[in-house]
Picture 1 (tube, rainbow, N blue to C red):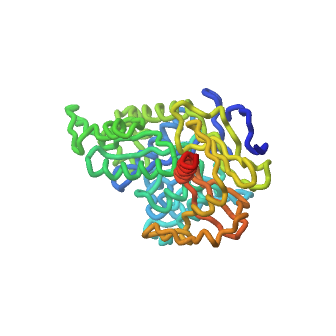
Picture 2: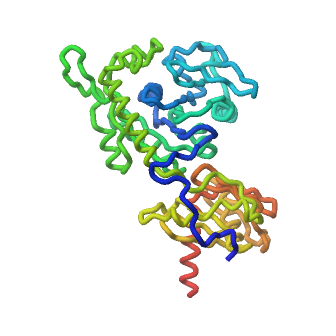
Length: 415
């Protein structure tokens, strides 16, 4: 066994109650607010949740990540078409309505000017908002995502160490069904689900106090139970939420004592408590030179848990020049032959995307093929650059685990 697979344990990166590791320089938590469809009030939830966290004493930032359809400037009274100032380091200085630090595409375009951009440019602007803004020290950075499961969501999952995602839904079945797809997308790329928020939950008559379930009620809580994820709370249907947003004075500012404002504060309290009690990922993002033991991601046996994740790695190491070792959170260790890994590449050159038919001829792969570098992709995969010049596609952790299953089954058969 080579020394790049440590035999001992290392201290936990974060114990219960200790300060969280920063997800980005100066930023403790990066939280995505998402939905499967439009029209569920996701942006309104993002704005008021960010304000609730800020009013509780946390330094909070907000990114309007809906590059093509920004709405945050209107809700916060931020002038459109007035680009932010730039500091001496070339970073944009976020505007600060009501104490929030905010950036949006709407600050770069006028009221009637559409952002006509192809996917790569949308990704570029999103990455600029994350890394090219002078955020300073933040406890929370809230990302208001566009609807769906497209480029923005995938870019974030692959490039940003998210603390987790909040799924916003309304109670009716059609919204819940699509919200499930959005939730499953984040689960697939191993972004933790921080909870579900049921928006437009019920209507409280301001005159008589009678409840009317216009969009039904309780679907979000039931979805949380069915899927085994936290339920953060429900927001009532209140005309003041809409009016306040249109006027650029969110309800936590215009009606701080309203039932809706109290609901937002309760959700913010549950969210912050949940994040403070969580243990951050053991493995940070990495670029690992296969022949350099100093760049090995780590081997954290202390992170093994009785009910640990089957596809959550807590260690990568080089057992020998021909073997990649993976330690999973549930305690299993897989030793994967690197040539077998090369043959299991799922990129478009090796596998026909539509049919799944393998196009790689094993005879064309050198016997001494080996990784040059192994790079993490978000929190759900790795990619490998090989010494035969091939740049592999993504090996999801789920795929690596299945390769381990196959390897163990073959070893058992051979015995």
